[in-house]
View 1: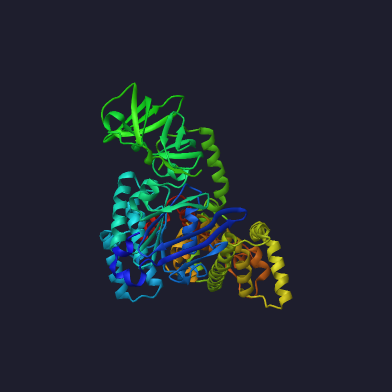
View 2: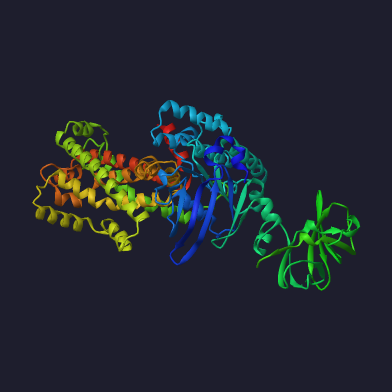
Length: 359
Length: 277
């Protein structure tokens, strides 16, 4: 959200101004409605991630912005100009494709130069910009290679270089890291983030990996069945999920279904004070919000309960417990690593950490 | 490639295969052998081997005129059928239009139709259109009859292609036209080479369609056919041997281009071809 301030040169012209606007965009393929009434603004210099399961419509949004598909309804605007009526090749938008889509008959250098060459840029300028772009992704030494001779990670870098050399206003990335192994993925994530800061280009990033979305994004737009579920910064969406779906999709959580009666919430064996209106309610309680009573001082507004340990998963710095609070109500609890546990224990959580969510 | 599991030999199958090959290739072998026989087509077994018939052949101007005519017709047919076949293949690959399934089958028809029917209908069309029969009508005949070959090959090539490449090209600012020339065509290079070789060979050997459409200038197969009516000379054997050698060479190249293009990475093959050249 503070990205405009992070790039002072943009501050005067584009502070807070939306670079890209989706206004009520819908997309149907035949009878299938893939996107429903999507309205979304992306600020200049922002890193916005479209997050969702496969089939949620996130890639379709990208293809609409790139110009490979036409919206069935709604409009797309970029810097005050209508974008969805322009053909793909006239949009100042470039894409990093999921499977890279490098040109196999061209060398790395020719791949990167392609966009400049078709737009009749002068040869000297092409040379300089291609070198610069390859340097940014650390691929200078492979300039003469064919894409088929490169590893997946290297092809990824070339695809990135080929896109940014055109200095797009907006870079679209379609699950660019999904084909890489876990280690390389982490490394590319940090390089992507650094690259985005260095270039100041707005990124619209598509992924199904919520951890990746959390690590990289200024804001996350969570899509579910073609509709926006919630748009917020990673911290906000994690701390205050609006719906049960969001709470479960972003990180791990315990969904507690119960009711509120006279200022008290009651979900199975758990009870705590709340100021919500009476009636049925769903709460999201993160595993790490629950602590062992012996480890915590209990201020007022703390809920306590006893539960029997069912499972314990050790993961280095912390461990995840699965506990039964009676009557088969299972909760997940994440505590700092403390060695093997067994039997019944008393647990506490602060009432404020039980976040009320919509269905 | 092979060799991880030694195949068991089946003696009967081996004998059978050898017999089939003898059945197919013995006449050709005899034809080739007699092109080197001093005593001509009579006289078995050949006693004196000679290159005399080849010397005669190379001095025979009408034969070489016919070869020239055939080359012109074949080259023209390759250009015509590849151009039209590419358009048809593109339509089949990416356009949706009513009657597409029918079009797809109709385009293949000349491949199945007996040459005599294709030839006769093209002749009637030429007469109807008031066209003078000449090499031009032969070229048009071959070109149209072989469009189906081009369409099939190029359609297969388009189906194999990764269309994300074309989207990438548009995304990078290339117009659809630039995309076609810089991405689509280079990707089809192997299919174009394969189809071109096959069409060239088919046109060089074609006799049925040519027979109906020929004017005063003969193509090579018709020249040979004409001479046979005056009796077989070893000179014909000599020219047939040369045709056979060139045809086999072209077919082998076509087959290699095609199978490699289908199986492994096309890029690797192109690089290998460049190294070979």
